[in-house]
Image 1 (cartoon, rainbow, N blue to C red):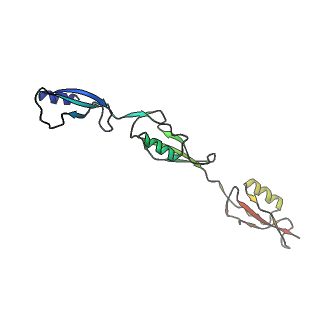
Image 2: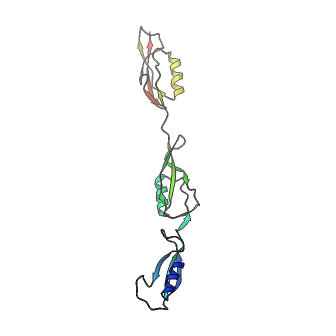
Image 3: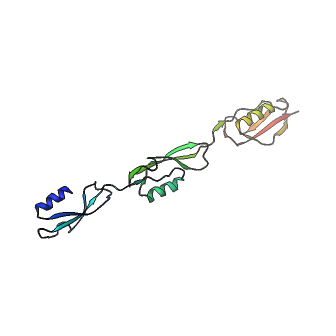
Length: 193
């Protein structure tokens, strides 16, 4: 503004500020617009009215914690902020993706167009275990291991066998070494006389 006044006075013109408004790229104090337009022919003594920037538009950052990622992006874009890099947090207490944190925090005075980074909590996959080898194990002990691992025992199948003691495991499905998770089904074949 001062530079505009100095240049105008050298040409015999007077500068008046008609209003001030935020501008996304020009810093505070810079001339955003003028009447008459640049390069227009004017007489000495004429008044040049200018609009001066108050700097980048700012606002209080909205709260996106607790929203789904889609809702958070829509809210940020509606308020003229840009969603930044999304951080994923795997948590066992979460059933669907939800914004758990945001940076900067809600309520922060921030220039519009700034980047906001959400941290999204997502359901953690169930832990995977390696299926132990239960062949030759007594049935009561196999049941304890199955319950401790959180597996579901299918109805036990019985087969006659002379090689394995009665009430001991002859076969299993899934086989030993397979990856299993809580809630997976286990089939045991048990020896009888």
